[in-house]
Image (cartoon, rainbow, N blue to C red; front, top):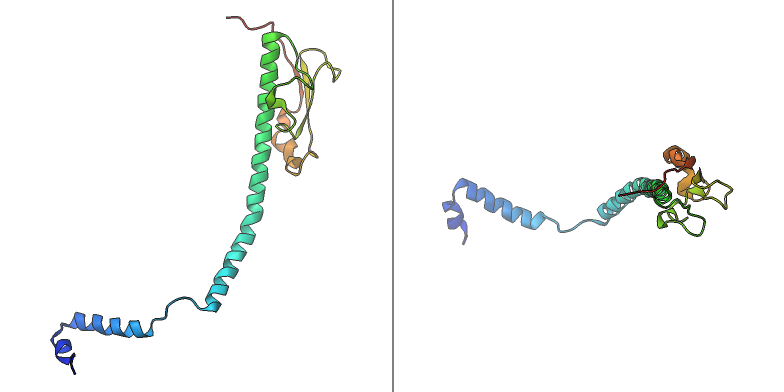
Amino acid sequence: MKYSRYFNNMRGGDKLKLYYQNKTSVTMRAGWTLIELIFIIIVIGILAAMALPRLAATRDDAKLSTTVHNMGVCVRDISSHYTATGRDYNDTNHPTSCEPKNTKCYIITYPPNGGLPPGELNVTTNPAADIYCADIDNVGGHLARHYKFGGKGISR
């Protein structure tokens, strides 16, 4: 009775707001039920199970792409060095770009240890080197060939 005069003096929209405000504050629950939380966790688990294999494949593709790029840099480094100095690299003296850890999916044969004449280089693919190298012939097979370098030096 105390609030009836106040309630009767209110306009229609204000009465409706007050009614729903009091109604929802009593009936509204706070938080999630255990079933809802379990369902959400299951859905997140299913989504993660579908995404993880693709993420692993993306990581392997990135490693393979890096190896192919490193091999291209290695061939350019060897070519530039031979053109500038007239000397070859070998198994122990070669650019950092040609380190086995950087060109893991390739086998590089240097002269004279590999039986090649000066100014030549042989590159072959090695799909068994690591699990991500299995696709090297399709992705970076264009770099696997016999290279011949020439030139008499670089002058300014």
